[in-house]
Amino acid sequence: MLDKTQQELADAIGVSRQTIHAIEKNKFVPSVQTAMLLAKYFKLSVEELFELED
Amino acid sequence: MKLLPHYFKKIGIGLLLVSIILGLDGFIHGFLDGISGREYNNDFTPVFPEFFTQISDYVLLLGLLAYILAKNKTEDELAQKIRYESAFIVLVITILILIFVNMVNPNFEIKPGIFLFLEMLGYLFIRLIKRKAILGGNYEEQT
Image (cartoon, each protein chain N blue to C red):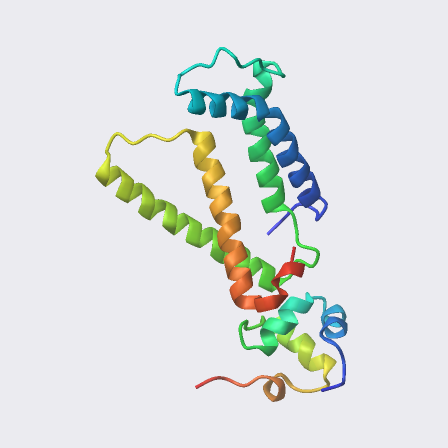
């Protein structure tokens, strides 16, 4: 999205690169705090970044 | 959850190695007894005092505990989720096994040291499996 590596994103929000990988692969649902940090990092709202599954 | 600093993983591994060295006499003794088929092998000459073999069990358990309680390099919510789920699975499996074994053999007994060792080993194994399942090929670095 911002042409950043998983490691750069992970370092910016204080989680491991593996956690970013797991979120991307839909294997892990982040906490509200991490979701908000991710949204802030990408300058988006949480709703724009994540969507509820049916 | 409060955990030990990451360097306790290395301390834990160090204690495991120490326990292997301390318990070498016991292992060799048991091995020779097994080969000879006798209860006690007179040919065996211990290298360390017997006290070392006894203390090796405690060092082993402490090493495992230090390794388990040490933080990952990056201890985040995913790591904690894997910890909690693994501990829960081990608890459930332990209860089921104990119920089953007691049904089959009501006089079943196990030494506390062996029980704790198996619990911690099972926890580490399940944590590894869960980590691999969630992280796929990326799980090695989450140590």
